Image (tube, rainbow, N blue to C red; front, side):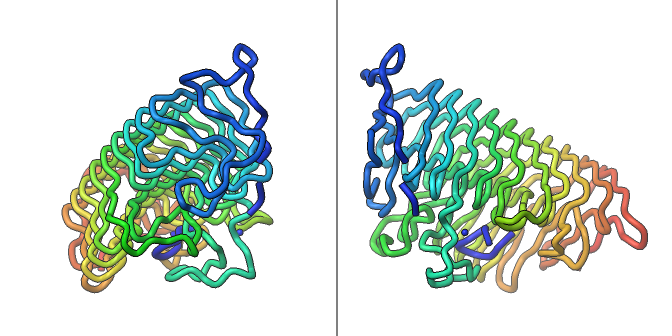
Length: 365
C-alpha cells in the first residue's frame, strides 16, 4: 500500500470503433463511441474513447482504447449507467473512470491492458508517495465520488496501476491531471459502494482493491468488499503486483465509516492481504469489519511490516482505527497472522491462523 494520494508505485490516445446498431449503429440508450478520443472529459485534462450519458447501457462491447487516456468515462450527472459484458483495453490511464455520479453498475466485464501510460519519469513526484506521474490515481476501474454503485463479477488483470479503486472527490480529483485540479471544488464522498465477486491479478504498482480517502476532510461510508479473488504474481517488468485489499483514511480529518470486508481470497500480494489504515493526523476509520476471508503468503514485499502478514491495522499518531473487528478468517503461510499498530487495537475472535517458522499469530503494539 503506497502512501497518501497514490496507492501505486508508470498519455496515449484510443481509437474506439464506431458502433453500428445490431452491428452497433449508435442508438438512443447506447453510449456514444467516437472515431476519435473526446478530449478533456469532465475537465480532467484526459481524453476518453467512450463517454457515457445518464441512463445508458453499454453492453457486449469491445472498447479498444488505444490512444486515449480513458476507455469509458462516466461523469458528473451521468446517473443510472450500466456497463456489462464489455471488454475495455489499452487505455493510457483508467480503463473505466466514473466520478461524481450515482446508481452505477459495472458487471461481468473484462478490463485489461490499461494504465501503462501513467508513470512518467519527467513528471514531478506526487505528494506522499513520490510516484512520478501527472495523475494522482489511475486504476483499471476507478470510482471517485460515487454513491449507490456496484462493481461485480469483473475480470481485472494486466493493468499498469492497480485494480479497483473507490475514493472520494473534491478539491483533489484523484483521477484528473494534477494540472487540472480545482481547489474550490466541493467535497464529494463515496457511499453505498459494493465491490463483489471480482477477480484481479497482475495489476502492477497499485492495490488489488482499495477504498481510501484522498481529500482533507473527505469521507467514504457504507462500503462492501466481498467475495473477490486477488492473486499476486510478484515483481513484473512494469513493477510489483501490489495486490491486497485496503481500507484507508489517508488525508487529515478524513473518515471511512462502515466497511465490510468479507469472504475474499487474497494470496501472494506484495503488500498485506487486508489492510486498515488511518494514515494522517485527525483521520479515522470507524466500524471496519474483516471476516470470513482466506489469506495466505501476503506482504512478500515487506511493505507495511518487516515480514509476511495476513492482516494489518495501523493508525499514525493523532489518527485512529475505531471499532475494527477481525473474526473468523483463515490465515496461513504468514509470519504474522495479524499485525496491529496504534492506540486502539482491533477486536479478534475465532480466527484460524497458521504461521511460518518463528512467526506469531498476533502482534499488537
